[in-house]
Image (cartoon, rainbow, N blue to C red; front, side, top):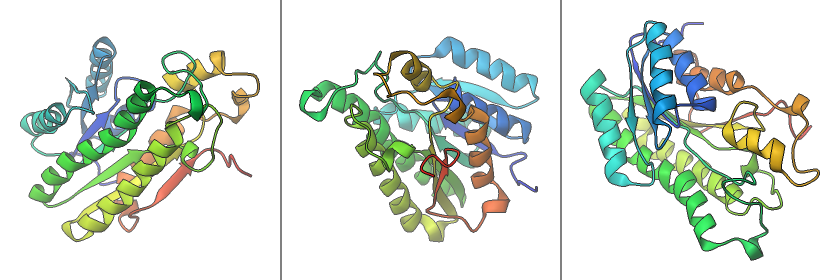
Length: 254
């Protein structure tokens, strides 16, 4: 496959672990420079950057709360300062009920604070990241954005409160961004993972979900499955793919 990724620059939010880290490593193997963004996992980000550099990639990390516009703007600016441009952006940072950091609750018991935490990260965060990534990509003549949604956007799950609506909103925003920027050489697509081993949310979900709420391990994907989908969407092989959602879930609804 001719990817067209070598020598280009990828920005990945939530890039210190899980799907974000696996995707960062995949970009590095394709010859891209990678900016890893994280809100709190600075030690993990440092280790990820070391692994990326060991693959021969240009790499750095930046601390960024995706719900804070000033920090998002600074994240994009820092990427351009270090690497010259932003060719690919994978907006992967997200949160959801896992029974530990955010409890499982029906809507009637969901607190405003829990709702705001999920929606601000998963929806407002995607909006802010795309806003500033699109501005940069328009100024440089093009680019590709991939946003992380979830199969939770398509199938209601009891106790998941704001999660599904936030991911559904992220899909709509992605399609809107694709429409508004299709004549600027910019493509915007979405990956919607199902339950995936090796992510903080899924790992906590396995140990804390109510009876029947956690998927069997054999029905869970790997972080590399999602990373491959992101790489393909960013590659020249997907140059005619725009405003699409790719579910990476092993056929969850079959």
